[in-house]
Length: 313
Image (cartoon, rainbow, N blue to C red; front, side):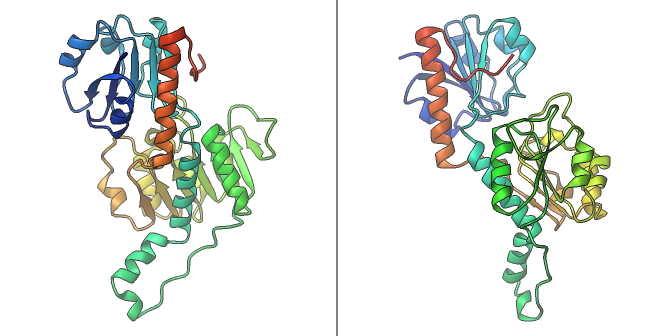
């Protein structure tokens, strides 16, 4: 059985068990010293399957002289040192498309939860408050204008769901996409000013990190809602906390955070924010597709030296 290295937040990641049904697996968790695993497996391993939470950098790659492919478990690869990977001629592949539908579902769910105050009303009912007073009015969710920052697979899936809620769709990318009927904005602040809900669906890059800042949030406005299912670092978190406290924006739904698995107490204390622990893509169906993509990439590379879902250079 072919040997594969798998890295993640822990050595008991559920997807690792599934991958271990197909390959002889060596596991590295971010909570453990990788030296022993790399000493044993590093000289022979040709494939690495990598989840989030474990940095793949030059020091790790130097211990893997025969490595020819890295496959990440989602669309994002911000935990991989791209320059080091390219310099060594290692192919980087991702599981793009596998998470699109479920992440988009969660994005709309977070929007509905914030806009219709679902979580707050759940607390209201459970506390017994309904026995003595009526819940307050929320805002209509359908028909409001959706703004999507990033129009990859996830962004397009969010747009399709927004259309189902009779929401006009605007988007922000570096260049207009001629194959979509939505309105394009070249600048994020302009997108925020034009919409009622801003969905973040971009990877963390030097250009996107911290881009959702006080200016963008002010442009989104006091009835606006921010939803982030991309990467936590694309939002300036202290400025978001202040915008939520001051009601500069109406609320936020967040599935990702800059320092996972930590979510700041300042956010948890606010009633106008709904928080989930990076679970947008965590469904049985998603992980069936992810594991199938991991296996297909590794199999193709080990057999033929080719890549099935390579990340563009």
